[in-house]
Image (cartoon, rainbow, N blue to C red; front, side):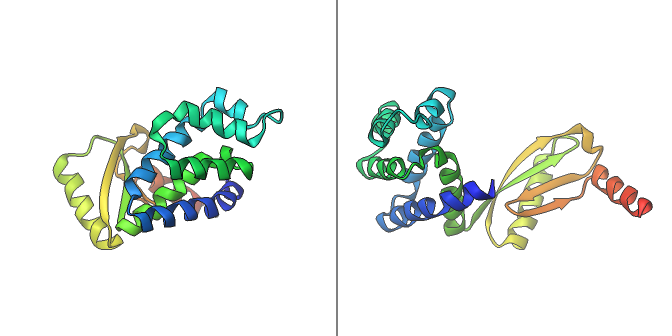
Amino acid sequence: MAELSTLARPYAKAAFEYALTSGDLAGWSKQLELAAAVAQTETMLKVLNSPSLTAEQRSKTLLDVCGDAINDKGRNFMRVLADNKRLPLLPEIAVLFEEFKANQEKSVDVDVVSAFPLEQAVAERLAQVLRGKLQREVTINASVDSSLLGGVLVRAGDVVIDGSVRGRLAKLALAMNS
């Protein structure tokens, strides 16, 4: 996965910098999201990885499927990716673009996994505390995993806070076995 990220990063950065200077972060985000979704389909993966097709044929096929949702600059970007045999990296490029965009906008999506559904008041308080700690606008995506037994597991980018009972029991077992 790190290798894909390394290969995709220059393309994501170039797209981000262009989108930022042209004032169209949201538009580029939508275009890359669509192209990445199309590129991940089984049929399109066969096309993108086909050695019998030229770069132009690969990019044309992808762009035909995406239709008018990709503007002229986006089409040029897809052609550059095709010429460099990087179209299969579109999903990773889209993810990295979103990370650059979130850093620019000072926002972060936080995944909160709890043993039971979070009450709205608790979710709001958690978001408020995380805003202070992360110095970013926080969007909470809550989910339920009953195997946690209790507590919460919080993921915000690279930051993971394991306040679950399962996590605490695992730490205790590790300490007892050492």
